[in-house]
Amino acid sequence: MHFIIAKKVGMTRRFRDDGTVVPATVLQAGPCTVTKVLTTDNDGYKAVQIGFGSTRSTKKPQKKAWDKLGLFAMVAEFRTEDAPERGSIIDASTFAPGEMVKVTGTSKGHGFQGVVKRHKFSGGPASHGHKDNLRMPGSIGATFPQHVMKGTRMAGRMGGERISVKNLEIVEVVPEQHLLLVKGAVPGSRNGYLLIQSA
Figure: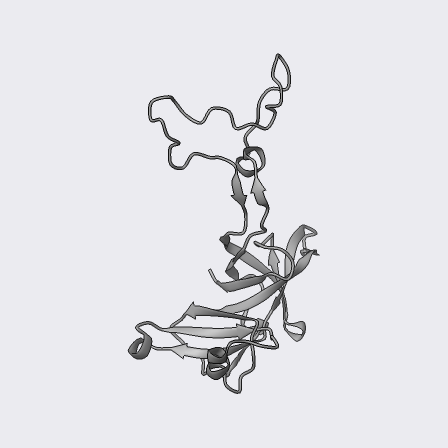
């Protein structure tokens, strides 16, 4: 299984041989350093922890754990059976064009939003005696329960959630610049961190 941590750069497009246009998201994938190898004997499962990017300072326990490897801005863990050695480098060249991947990231935060934007409510009518209720939620239930039912769609915080998009195709790999071009859109804003692994 292939995996890597990436940073979202922006969007572009590519033309296939038959002339069709493919929208693609540009990701700076790696290089990532293996910071820890988890084993069944010590941790109860097999996984690999990798670090990406750099930072100026971090907590003392992390400095001790990452001794001689550097200080990383982002660290993530991936379940895998074939674990590379600690300190080895993972880069974009591990992926190939046409490969399907799963991309996980944090969606854009929209703050506190009403029901029209958050849940696609149609709102109230704009005429016939209605006033100031164009974007109101309307009725939220019957008289009997005398409380708001769980799961009722109402105004509230929107976005900022962990989202995974499966089966995205890798359009192009540029290993010299550590770039991956993935077909379509991925969660999050520019410069957001993403976890990429084989679908």
